[in-house]
Image 1: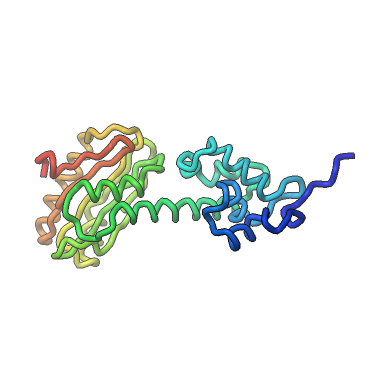
Image 2: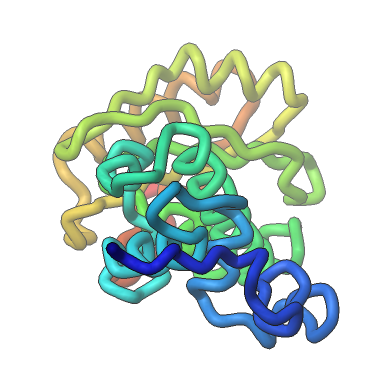
Length: 230
């Protein structure tokens, strides 16, 4: 007969993840212990910590790789249902947004590099292309950011009517177009160029300026404005 499995509740108080975080601070916990707290509980045969270690292994014991996993990927682990997978995905997204905010401390746009760093942190784990627009006021302050579309692995679609309608609702006087290239390539495609010029020309009729179109990937960024294409 197999020995009865020890649950987290049977551990010494100092070794339990929640109590350890409360008494020693989050920095004292390992990656798997933090994940165990998010999972809340395990299964009949596995503690939350055992389950957390499997989650971490699925991400190759790397938080960056873990952040690229989808809800469906996480649910492949026996004991991780939809609710647990959604909780993990939400926590990873919060971490991603925090990093993005830290990389772009001021909401006032002064150069393409600062915007690119913000977008890289925000979009780097995406396996699909996402088209994002930043809406700015007269002081070049970002009033709003919105994901306009999310496409397949090879591309996405940006509807000028949707973008300009949103710009008017946000009282934007200028906008920055942005999208990511999951492939890593920073070279704009003919479609990228066409949509940029199409939106720029349409925006003129509403006295809205397209300041830039920035493409980001893990390799860096490409700015239409810096390259003299706007």
